[in-house]
Image (tube, rainbow, N blue to C red; front, side, top):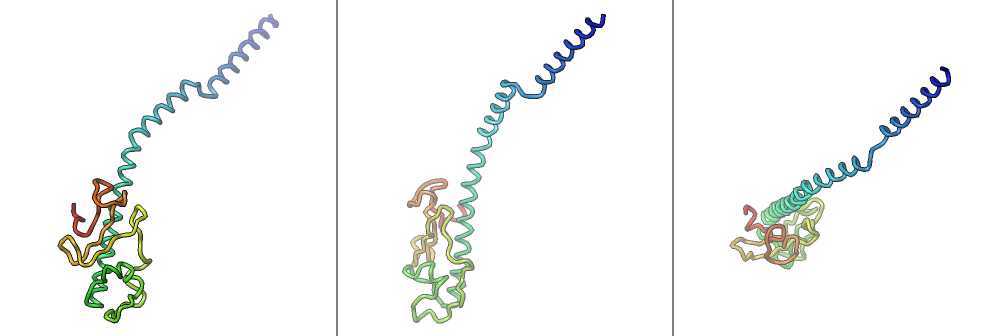
Length: 162
């Protein structure tokens, strides 16, 4: 009777050790199900995130243009005119070599200096403006070329509300 109970006891411990091993990890199918679910979530979320990045870059460009407009208006109040196209936005940071610019504010009109647009390009400043304003201030968008749609569209002080 002791031999039978010892054999049954060792057989039971082998079973419990097998089930402990089996419950200690994940099966290949369980891992594959999780990977498929994560892939589906990424496929749904990624386009929304990318679109949000584009929207944020457009909003940043519009905010930069508003900041430049404020600085240009302060420049005009001090010097009774806007900078010329040749002087450009640099006139907001470094005093132009122009004898008519007498009241240039020491330290300039932009804190932090000139910024590039969210796509790494310079903002374009043209005086006189070609869109019915005293000056044009714009970015060429993500593609860096005139025209375009969506994220590639030009964003200027004449079309900020569109």
